[in-house]
Image 1 (cartoon, helix red, strand yellow):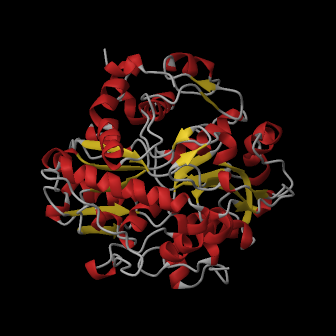
Image 2 (cartoon, helix red, strand yellow):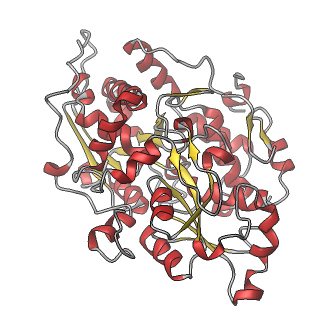
Length: 453
């Protein structure tokens, strides 16, 4: 039995996306830039170097971290640009833009020595699946989850043709419309996400199922590149999109569609994306790992300060990173979302992306209880042909992959506060009243009406 079973409670698109630059952004990628394009340290405002205790110098000063140009990646970018990596002795960190989630997976499989990456930003539970060889053709690449990068910053967008049909947070009143779409339109209601069996797939599945729509039977739900999804929403061949900031803002502002809901409304302060690194790199470089963590934690604290948000937007929107007009990011970073379809506007910074703390505690700390929800949800939908067969197996994988102990050590050494006392955030409550108790995930599965188990 895993030790985890004893959890302690506790308008850039000016037209219809015709520009090449817009198309590149809509894909969420431009490929890996050359080393000179990964973002230089801002020497005018860089953090002063921290004294490194004798014997605590990093074993290496170099690592290559991948990222996708969405708001989840901000702590990695800020740690580089503001000099936090260098402050803790990691002077040769490369943050490398990835062409897609699949490219990031393939690049971490070969590692930086093979021209890939050592780790970086991940949807969950990609690190666990890579560790088990489940999404790497049986090639097991052990990884460690080291920190959560952010919470929130996602939404479910609906094509404008469905305006006035009742598609909101509670989908139940529109369930018959969605399920009957084939009879009225000649095809099933079509929805998309960017990578299968991970965050954005989970969010939209949960939303559909909570409203009485079976995402495997009543609709077509599939992985589609962002550019194709958005264009499909424009031309009437795509109906819904589970997406992260800055997409929700653009979809509404450009008249493509409206927001059914923000994920912050579905599950307040939910786990989002994570920092994970190859286990062989971490095992060989434990001091460098903690130096990286200290830098990213300090970057997360910096990102959360309201007085820094304007500069944060300026940094990540820059051509070396997202390469988009900063206006696209200003609204979500201030928690301002125009929902569309007659819904009231959201004006609450706590419903936008947060990086260090939220009303429930730590954002950065990688709670094992959150890992367990992602793997329980994996079982719910029967993903990967039952490769994760039961809760005990899931807990054992989590104990191998989740290195919250390194997060805790790094935070203590750096003198940071807000350190959780246990590996569980306790019972989680979703918008439909369903509860996930990490001490009893079987009860969560039993409470769900639509599932594959």
